Length: 288
Ligand code: PAF
Image 1: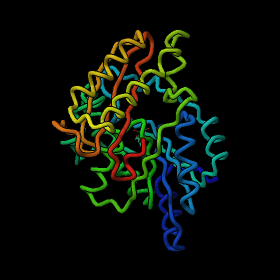
Image 2 (image 1 turned 60 degrees about the vertical axis):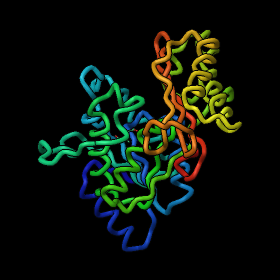
Image 3 (image 1 turned 180 degrees about the vertical axis):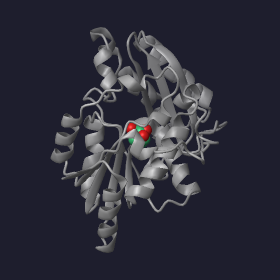
Image 4 (image 1 turned 30 degrees about the vertical axis):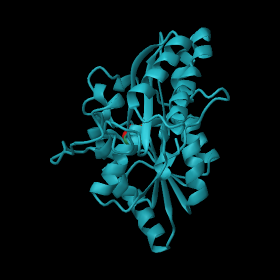
């Protein structure tokens, strides 16, 4: 496994891979790898000749009050996890390598960003698309892998790829779950025993909404209300939002007659958990 901090070494390698006709799978991360990342790496390993993992805690996507300095890091563990999952190259740049000068040209996300979690994180998706545009140009992947746990990020990356014609196939990878359906998250350890017991209700509530639609309900308000009632009866968590939107456009819908996302965020005492279901599927982006 090769590990590079600088852009030139990665570009040299990528150029020779392209000359040899090798396909490149890319998994961008901010490190501190967990099972969700491993799932992305496994998918990339299966579908490509060469797998690149990037580890970079991107300062541009952190807002005021979001603690960039305390973002967890464990390079040793990440290297071992990468090795175990058959990564060929880790790109591990520093801030100075990625942003040697203040940017002269900035990207603005005009759609898909001001709903769901994006509503409370102004500037976040601008930071995400900026770093991904750079990483796509450096690593020149055939395929890039993203988890459907963050379905909004998948939708925004889909727009980036389409709007700017990146020759990259976006591969959304289904959320990894515990056996009781709870989406795996590093935040789950902050749940009390009682909350951990209640938390699988989040996915169950979303599935109730999905089932209603499959049985013919077309009114989003009715679906959201049923999910809300279930969550309120089964957990002590405080609901931040329950939204039902078209997917991947993330626009409000009057009637559910296209692919949609039903998503929620729930505050427990020391953890805010998010989850979603995408259904009425039409594409690979709907697998979450
Ligand atoms: O999902 C993440 O970890 C980050 O948003 C990403 C895609 C690596 C960009 O910094």
